Image 1 (cartoon, rainbow, N blue to C red):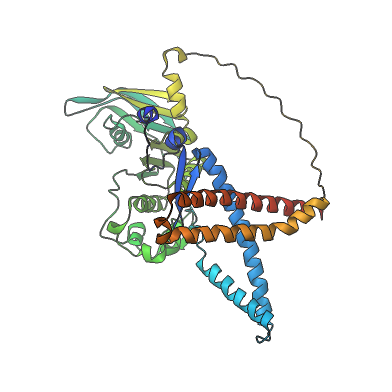
Image 2: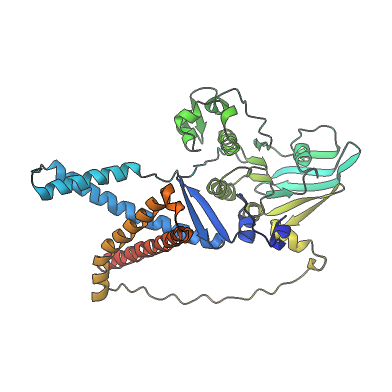
Length: 436
């Protein structure tokens, strides 16, 4: 699909959480964040850089605004003579600031995940010898053997219907009718993430699917189930709702919340990335990378596999199963005919000599600049807000179409200039602080 779309000459609009797909195809990102749509020209890597710069600028702006609001609140508590014109204006400005603060939509945040790790398993986790399976006269697995040791992180890939889930079920002894033998190690505590989400009861509430009572225990710490579910972005009212009303992404987060209450030293995940947003996906990725137990991971997400697994089992069709060192990209290189025993000379890079950090003071020009920046930013933000109000008015679109395009272009330029100005302000503030 990726190759087909890359060769397509027309416009493509697609929705995905697949980061590798985004990096390969996207030339423009349209983002919906806190009820606002932002158009980011450029590829995914450019979007990430510009988005982070915007968030840093937003954090700086909000911190400065909150500091100023606190000062004004302290002033008004001291008591004022409201009849003075100057004071009346300051009180009106304070009311506007309160209104603006009340309308601010904070970032929703990301989930917090902690695995409930069990006692360490034996060194040998699984040993399969000559396993095979035929389904409806079709050979899914033919004479496959492998050894899985404690701490291995193994990816399992292949086309749909090639036998990935069947292989998992045989290794976990969930499937009795098969050829060959599977020997399991000692002290195994397996946590299984099912791609079909069969472990969830649609009629029960979110919290009832996670705990039998009001509390869960994770890593010897007892917590109320409502507080625990908030770590997975379920607010209290959502935690009391039946599972049948949840979206696909919410169901996946619930399954993760349920899974991580079970003590485990082996995690088996069958397509865990379906419907997960990128922030939650990256958090899960980081957690699995740091996990000290054994991981078996079925996924179509290439970047997810590349970042986690140390070896890859490939269901190649016709019952053939191969085993390769490394992640998805490593498998692609190894499967090439000339890749066997290929030696690649890796150049040795000299470490750059670290320069001694020297703190400097602001120049006269920079001092003038740091004084002017707040007013300049305020002016640009006022112009930016004015343009947005125009675009929100349906009457504006009845006029010349070029005015609409010019306004959108101006908004993009202003957003970049505002982000740059905040970044410059933060830099000058840091220099000023370090030189003090």
